[in-house]
Length: 585
Image 1: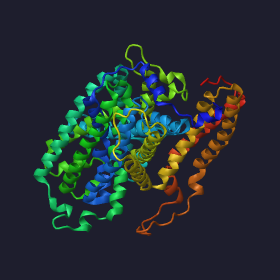
Image 2: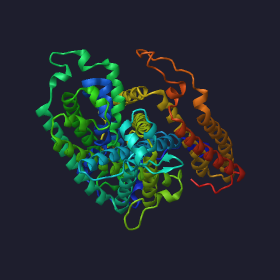
Image 3: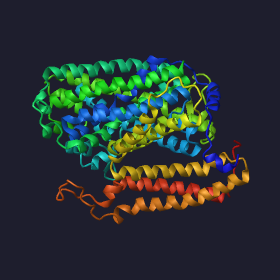
Image 4: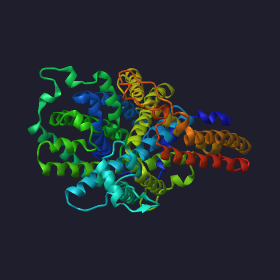
């Protein structure tokens, strides 16, 4: 095989099965465990947090947005179910892409999945901290507010000015600047990491208990809400399109793009493939079962929340379900919701923290990441290094990051993964039509293209700044692939060194250029952006930088320094002359 063909070389299904049998991971999970893992991953920060923002876009028609998103996820979920039954290997969409579309696409999707799992968990940890702080307040347990908010909060236009003032008055300072970071998010991430290192079965027991509790809380919210709701707020009886759907179908689809964060997680079931007792049967049950349960609950919650308070009020709050239940006048009910939200996001953290290390493990076994990522603990049978590294990264970023940028970046990255899974399912039907498929997507040649189009459309509803950030993330990933992963698969050491030198030279220049742009771009793109159709020109004051990039100066400068370090890594590679032992494929 020529070395260049490694870009598109596929791993056959038989190769992947053989590799999975010697992984060292313990098969301990059944269909109920997997379904509850999926529910644990899906019901979390999305329903307890983003439902308010989505209601601001769609009004009471947010229930239709839930349906739109569920359809898109359901189409992708069917494709996931077929691939997991055929290729029950840790790695999720990364492994499926390798089996169907080749190494380069697999690397891109593996890198992309870091947005869903690791970076997505950052958003969940931040939301967990918000609800945990509210719970501490309700229980009259004092905790410093400056240890529960990120530094960006002090300059966020949407921040509560009273909380900002409290932080400035009570936080210690360095050179006149108040110290502010999210210690709560760090603590919960470290606790989850320790649990995951101990073992997957122990983690599943904890998840199952938490999921049952949070399902009870959501049913409680629905039940209590129905006792006090005002269904005239919907504008359905008699039908009033302006009241039910204030921004028309445009608002419904925009809200669907936002609510996608509420559904992320059902695919995390597939990352536990090598720890499943009967993967060909149990994985499809877990994926489709968890998606169905969550969709029914979400639609019910959407109806209840928009009937308890005006949707405009939901949109203005970080904890919309608390706001909705508060309208019942039952303070004890609000306490129950706070407990349920905190538990819900604990389960999401658990499942996502479990998924990311297994993707890294799979990529490492394929030679695309250092061997350390594939190490399995001899006693606990877990990928200990990958688990600890993921925990540290999530903890540090969640202490400093703002949730708004995190949610949108996760959405577009996950949608891209879903598109590739749908394409991969169709590709495998063509390339290996005769392999055993314990689960087959009914009407694949309708479901597959519909999944690609629906997920692709939801990607278009996200702002242009999300596309530019995704492109930046992929540029960094391609640098890692061509300067490290791809040369390791070249059987000729001289060719490997040549590939690495060329990659180092190209990406050193690219990263320096991107670093300079992020350092100075807010000045270069300071001109006013075009006013979108339907917007009030008098209220539209965004610059081109805000529209296409949107990072605040401090964050942009931090990313610029990170890119400069990557450029230096490439320069160091050039100075080494591209030397290094190439992995023999």
